Image (cartoon, rainbow, N blue to C red; front, side, top):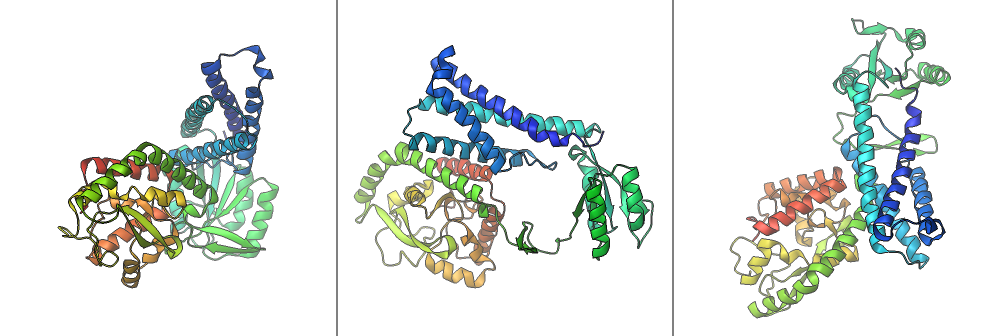
Length: 458
């Protein structure tokens, strides 16, 4: 059975989402207020309508239902998390601007139920269709024009992942022949009509534009998709983006996840919410205690500020609890093992990473993030940028209170350039592979390290 009903999947997703939105909302409402017929005449019924309309509008704007066969759990998780986060911000803005009064507990539980319902619904659909395709249904017949290494890798992908539902029918090529070659390029037209081909992958090293244009015209008239397979393996980057300047296609080699506006909004929203929670649950009582201990242990202020390199290499004032005696080398000499400048209280603060907690104020200001490459002193940025390749790439994003390199053990003294190169390599990996799940993992490991103490902290 081919893929002719795949166009209905978007509608199926939308219907399921709408049912679950209303289910989550009404479940929360019944839990707090109990349901009565007068509900349709209350302000909560109006809010329910807004919930539905705003959700449908967001899915249209964000193209959430523009589904791809090659999906996985992380892709679905990030997509749903973005949608729910933006929907929550939109509803909160409407309530705030309109000065409406609604139960915060009801709203909170609605989103808790909604998150659980939507995640389970999407994952259930993913499992169903992948299993269904493995059994030989909802497939797409595909052929490849060209017989080369890239074409053979694509054929292996089709075979290795049957859950994506691609049925490979053969290669077409003029320059070679073997058992997998179904014919030459002129044989394609008859073959695709006789075998109900859904997609054609063009992988010839030399492009015959006249042939390609004729092929596309033929494919359009027969509801067949043509895709061009290119070989970028020799390039060191995997994240590409095609932009159009009028009709001129431009390949952007360097793109990172946080170039996306939605990803930045999600990360910034989390930074603000997480920082506010830490501020009012931890820092509000911890700052006075730590400040007193620091002042009793040594003369000088409780806080220490230092200019560090931030996003786009713009310097900013980074805040910490003071862990050293006041000295003239603070802005040029890095802390070392058994450093005599470190106080008794300061050693404990460093060991537990508590000295970094004032940087949540930097996060609220906007010059840092909860997770990101650690900000370096200006002197170190100047020095290491001259000797470490791609060092400055770490400034594509905001620096963080914690980061992937830190939980991997690369923190503390960096007198050895090899250690710094490894740290920068991990920073680059984080920037190129950022995801919200990765940030959560880094935060969890950081908290665990704070509890047990970090052997590399001194």
